[in-house]
Amino acid sequence: ALEEEVRELRSQLEQARQAGEHGQAALQVEFAKFKEEAGRSAERTSQELQRLVKEYQTLALEAAAETQSLQEAFSTERVQLTVELDMERQRSSRLNQELSRLSK
Image 1: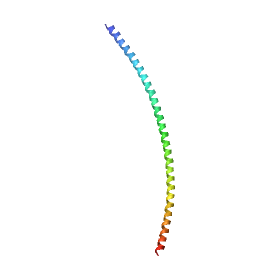
Image 2: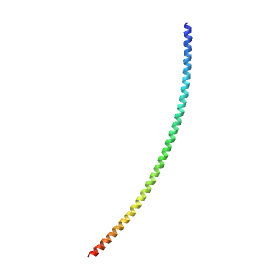
Image 3: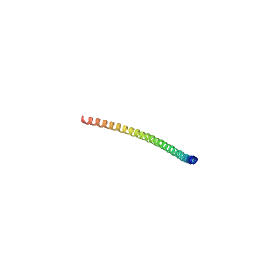
Image 4: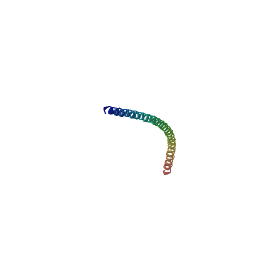
């Protein structure tokens, strides 16, 4: 009877060992899949980050060009308005002189 129990325990031990090996192999397969997917995910993230950096750089260049264009347009407009203001001041001065002359 004792020998029967020993054989039964050895059989259970062997089954447990085989189940453990099978479980370990399954875990290794799952870990390999996880590692592979993590690598692909990291690559996708890296590519997306590179795309976003390029997009940001493009937008920054466009914004700089637009700012330059607006500054030039503003400067031109300011010069034009300054010239017009000077001309209006001269006209006003002449009209005031004429009015003063006519009032005498």
